[in-house]
Length: 291
Ligand code: MN
Image 1 (cartoon, protein in one colour):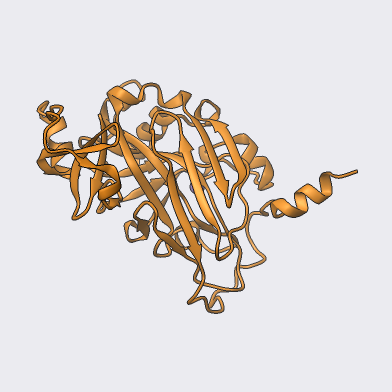
Image 2: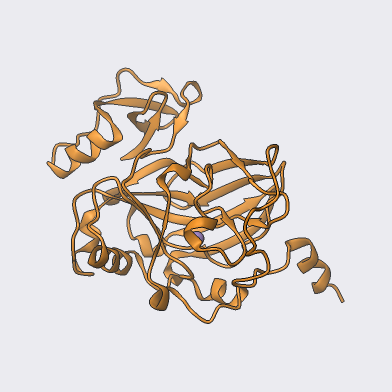
């Protein structure tokens, strides 16, 4: 099923351009019904045109958002990073950073660089503690798109990635049975019409099952928790007025966000010139490429 949260947070099934309300209520109710083996496809009656609903983040209140650092080798190379997920483990993004699809990313500082990171994310469907890699995928409720918006610099990752609005997610949450192999999804991400990222999740250093196995060996995973798998090469700076679009095969609707900086102030922390080295902005990359 292709599920969305909409309006006041109720869950619906997306069929064509119609949203069919789920009788269970919210996405959390849908996850509980799935765990009980009782999540059925609703009948076609009562559909609402997609254009008439306000799409919301699929799960608004996960107990945690677990994120993989440096989980594609081409991103490791562009960041000149000597470590990847197998050395770093995971980091956490604050759930309060979630942003509804189509929302506006608010850049907090005028003197720092902020990048887009397009990623495949998954939502946990039942409590998982120390699950094996072999069993891991059976704990996944569904898959969705996530933008891990990031401030570059030397502050802790959890700080740089937890500003309010820094985690657009959605709009479609496709149940695991329908999504297919999460290690064979194609991802593309554009910023203001420029294609910046193009990758296959087959190139993940730690695939989805390994991430769940590892994360659940550290922290109990609860229904609704989000794991985001990391970003491929092609990160680049965002400026006010940009729009970001993330497409992941099998989801059917792209995740979009706008960028604003109307309330930006000077950064109170001093990590600007520390930490991993980001690639130059795409414009200067293009200039460098010319003979
Ligand atoms: Mn990321």
